[in-house]
Length: 205
Image (cartoon, rainbow, N blue to C red):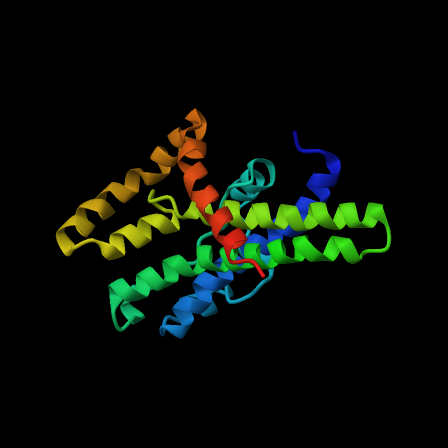
């Protein structure tokens, strides 16, 4: 159950996680020649530009969720498939990096604070940041449209299979809703979340 302290500390953590995620998508696309995100005002860390209310509530309460997707135009990329792959991975990768940073802070900062209460609050805040960033990364890596993982899969498929997969994408949101409703999404997330957690711990400072 989410207590009041976790809720209050979770709000800035949530806003930071989704802002970094969507900024990374937009900036990767911009570096590859696509100015769409820039024209739409999405090359910013301002959370108001990226907030999806339902996805934010999911992330706040269940530690996994989503933000308002950054639109891209693959026609600008020199290589459509490679560009799409890089942009799709940029968001989750940025969250994993953020989780790694907060994990290392969690291992050190609380021990240098002057009071036990302050150390406990800092520990909780840093832990929540780790959880939200990993949850956002893991959820978006699921290969279900319109999540980032589906774009990764599509970019790796040969043209004929990619076309069939993209035709399925119109049903993706409904499939996602069913998975969330039945709890299957949580089961699918567990190995991804666990692997990402292991990686940041394995390569911590």
